[in-house]
Length: 72
Image (cartoon, rainbow, N blue to C red; front, side, top):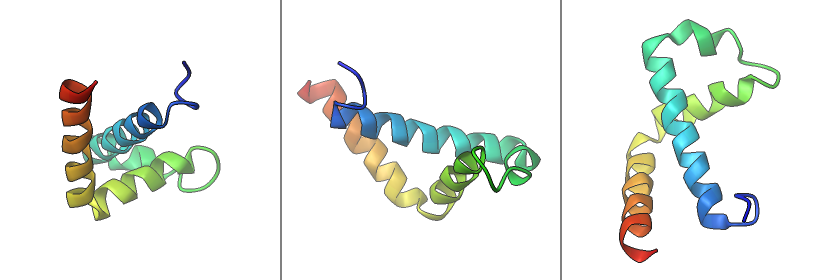
């Protein structure tokens, strides 16, 4: 089944994308900062969400990991 039709997989992909963008932003900030608009601006927005809402992203990641490991 595709991740588009499975809601839990879609949430997992979004959480991993947010965490990856924040990690790239912390290593090389100029890569995402020069692409604030357009199609690549989505990654900059994910990095901003991860920076500003980091406690919520961390809790969501822990809950998602717990549900993948123990519930499925």
